[in-house]
Structure formats: C-alpha cells, structure tokens
Amino acid sequence: MPTKMQFHLAKVFLKIFLRDRQSIFFSLFFPIIFMTALGFINRNGVDPVNIGVINDSPDPSTIEFIQELIDNPVFSVTLGFEDRLRSALEEGEQTLVIIIPEEFDITSEGTTLRVLVDAAQVTELGLILPVLEKSLVEIEREFRDIEPMFDLMIEDVKARSQNYLDFLLPGLMAFTLMQLSIAGSGFNIVEFRRKGILKRLFVTPIEPKDFISSIVMARMTIVLVQLSFLIAYALLVLDVKIVGSLASFYLMIILGTFIFLCLGFCLGSIAKTQQAVMAIGNIVIFPQIFLSGVFYPIESMPDFIQPIAHLLPLSFISTGMREIAINDAALMEISSSLIGIGAWLVISFVLATRLFVWKEVAN
Image (cartoon, rainbow, N blue to C red; front, side, top):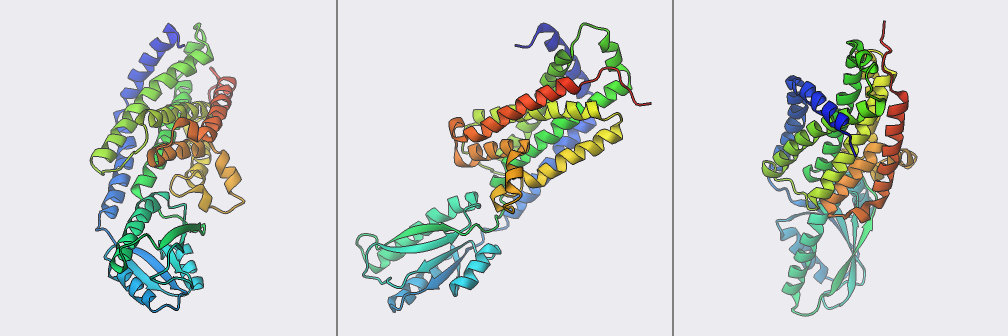
C-alpha cells in the first residue's frame, strides 16, 4: 500500500504536471485528429463486400445460385479460378473467396462450401460471415423450402490484414499510454535532475522507491483522465464499439501505464540531457509502434519477426486490450498477455529503482 509520504508527493507532482497545459493539450490533439480521420474514412458509404467465387460444379443450376449472389447488393462478386482469386485475397483485393465444389447441386444436402479468408481480419470477418450465412440461407430458400443444403468450412489463408477503427482503437490507446507515460517520467526526470530538484530531494528521507511510486501515481492519474476522454470521444462521437468489460479494459490501461512509466524512469536515468532522452526514447518507442500489433496483427508479420514482436511490452498490452474490446475476452482468457505483463511489471520496476540516480547532472 502507498504510504502517506508517497500520496503527498504524488499530489505535489500532479500539480506540477498540470501546469504544463500545452503538453496535455497536444497529447490529446493528435489521437483525436487521427481517430476522427479514420472515422470519416469508415463512413464514406458502406461499400459492397468483395467476394470471389470459384465454380467447380458442372450443374447448370449453379449459375442461378451465383446470379443470386451477384444480385445481392451486399456483395461485389468476382468469378475466376482458385489461383488467381487466392492471390487477390492475399493482396487484399478480395475479402473472402467461396469455392463451390464439384458435387454441388440444388437438390443435394449437406454440401460443404469452402470459404477462404484472412482470419487476421477479426473485426471485419466477425461482421461479414454472419451476413454471408444469412444471405446464403435466403438464396437457398428461394430454391427450396427444406433443410439447409450446405455448410460453410472456413479456411484461413493467412493473408495480410486490413485495419478498421474498431480494430485500431485498442492499439491506439496502448500506443498513446506508452507515449504519455514515457514522456511523463523519463523527460521529467532529466529535467528535475538538470534543475537540481533531485539533488535537494536527496538530502531528505525520501527513497528512490518513494519518489518513483509517487510520480507513477500522479502520472497515472493524468494518463487515465486523458485516455478516458479519448475513449469517450471514440464511443460517443465516432461510434466505436467496445464489446468487452470496461473494467478489464481499464485494468490493462493501468498495468500498461505502470510498465511504461517505469521504463521511462530507466531512460531518464540513462540519459543525461533532454536531447539524449529523446533519442533513446525513440529507440524504445518506434520499434514497438510497428512490431506490437498496434496498426496490424502480429500474425501478418514475417515468421522470423513474430517471436520478437510477441515479447515486447506493448504487444502484451495491445493484444490484451484488443481481445477485451473486440472479442469480449475475460481476464482468464488472456492469461498469456497477463503473464507477459506481469513479467514486464517486475522487470521495469526493478530496472527503474536500480538505475535511478539522484545527483548526477550533465555538465
């Protein structure tokens, strides 16, 4: 439990942070502009779903079945051979590909239609597949009013992913909290040391763990308020959906903030100037932006990169937040992410307290 001294210091640091209104404003400005731009892109009309159809059946009635798909305004249908349409799927030109088997005919029952998809497009597929199934049932009932004559067998072709605002929001929140946290600890520590504030605190009974804990509490308060504003904007203005528990979602935010605040302390202890901490911070931040599944799934990256990407702290946080927000995952269902986060909590706090320096100042 935090001590009375830590709470008092946290209150003092909170007042200091709140004086930097310009920093607070711009830390909100960029995510809002980014989300708004994506929101307008997503609202430029509802485009038909691009689906490819491969017809291996010689039955003449198949032509009528395909025509029903073509006449459905929900779909934009392309006919072709498997090699060409599979390539189009991998390149993102098709959302899914339906393969009508040779044994397909209108009178048959239990025929399986193969559907090639990119399972990394979890948000899009979660919306499209129910629509496809419903459309196929409606088409079937136009032919006959009996039991279903086909099932769908989904095959993931591991193509590239396409980003949508619902998919991006958890990753964007994780990215934002990383930036806010590292800037709120590493940059401030260098500035406090440069101004001699830490040198004065050194002669007090305050220990590094008290100083670090108090800044973590103060900065976490600011981060939670800022991210709450961004989440409310996304939910109310951009109509983004978070289907999982908000309590679990916020727990991931709190844990992620703690990790990156401690990592920021490490950077602030290593760097001696503002320029140095900025350069070192970029080394930590930028690889995680592109390797942590913020803007596209880790599974779509090259195989040799994935093991490294999965071990990054931002990967555990963004994956956990996305599973909660999109798939309504309970905490027990994201145990692998929680284990990784727990490991980084210990590593980051130990490094922050061991590397922390009170008095060293750049000449």
